[in-house]
Image 1 (cartoon, rainbow, N blue to C red):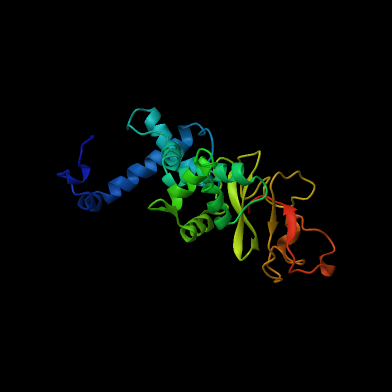
Image 2: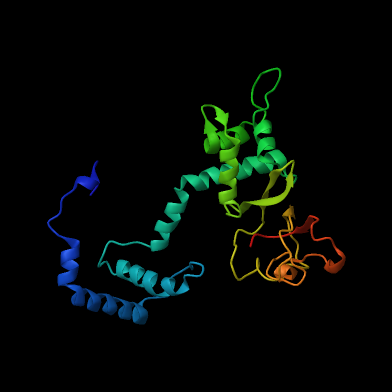
Length: 254
């Protein structure tokens, strides 16, 4: 029940004691429900990425129990989606990506450059020229009306390659010893580990363009001429190329 202080509620039942006393009966009932759901429940609509076994067993059973009216339970996926929709970090990242894309396009920017641009004001009205960018930066790294560049940079680093509304941050070469950041986006919002965004990207139109810094020349590096870099369409004839130079290519997130 709804109450102002749910943590102060008292119960007659001790869950740990009850489970210990009724463990075998609870296991039997759980297995009975799973067996019945496998035999009678329809296939649930939609999936959950790589959690297909959970989707076809646990979620299927929960949906079936709810449809029979035995318990007041709903679709577990709705709870997951609701949690993501209410995550304040997701909203912050979405706002920053939109503002960053509007302010810098495909050119990208460093954190100090973004801060200076966000703080630009019209000389006549003294109003912010890029209020959305300023609001996004201030929400993430604002301290007493001042944007903390170090804090902002660490936040973007933690959230790079995290996809929100089809957009994500990608890092590029450094400019004046500061990391370049690009707000990339894709027409498709379906990113799967094994799907259209994995494997060989050669010959497929890409709509995100940003430079990639070569990190090393180890056999396991994606930038290595002998490693998995081939899967990302790095130009041919790499033996004659200086691996310290910045290579530019169109790519999707890993």
